[in-house]
Image: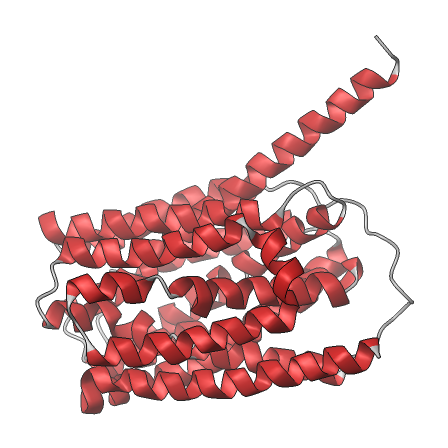
Length: 390
């Protein structure tokens, strides 16, 4: 046996172990998200809160990304570690879900929402940053690991639909509490970050394209606000069965998984700006269709567009970070990206309640307007790319 074989075998084992741990982290986080996004608003409604109050709570949780993500990302880059801050944050998030059942006023609910938003939202960009750094070295394919999270989201959305069909709304909160316990264990098992690669060209100042990129991704994420806040309630009000609703959420994420499975090819074919443009075009199709129909058979087709409105958006953002950001700032920039989505979604969540109360399903037309602005931003990002490479 050649002398280098044991070393090579050890490297393969370490690589497989790192992939497994990152996949577990994505699965745990996105299972919790798959319960929270479609069904936490249903739990809030079961507690007697109005659509406007629900919008305030969800908007507050989302807004906390703006404060938490850049600070946590910067701290992680300075420490050279994701595992320690991620573990502490997961414990705080688990505590927040434990406190939700003890609140008896809107302002107490908002206070716990602040804790949840500050603690849970940074977990996704922190996990992204570890996967991206390993991916730069050729050890892993980011899209393949990220699709494990999407698959976990599908499982959670079906579990939530089953709970609503066969149980009670309060069971949603119990499921979320259990999910966060798993998240804590996953963060404890997070692999250590690999050594940083040498910076490309030294310290790089922010570019105009970075600002346009963050604004564009913020707008495209914001266009999902009405769906995330009131999609389930809207479909239930039009007699769509709870189990079917779970299938609709699952189908959207399944379409996202198909795109993530071919992420490397998609990035080569379209590039970062092209993927962002695809996300915007998907929104220009998806949101008007959701405004116009609640037919279950048609909704199944519409939900396939999630592959574009979210899947292409996220892959475009990841491609941008891979192409333009050094290892020493990966956690910071991925956290800024998450924060920009928080700004857009947070602002839109605050008005989503009044919009839906006054417009009903027609509120989705407003989301199409945000996709239009996102398409303009994507083309400006593409123009900056052309200028930089000229």
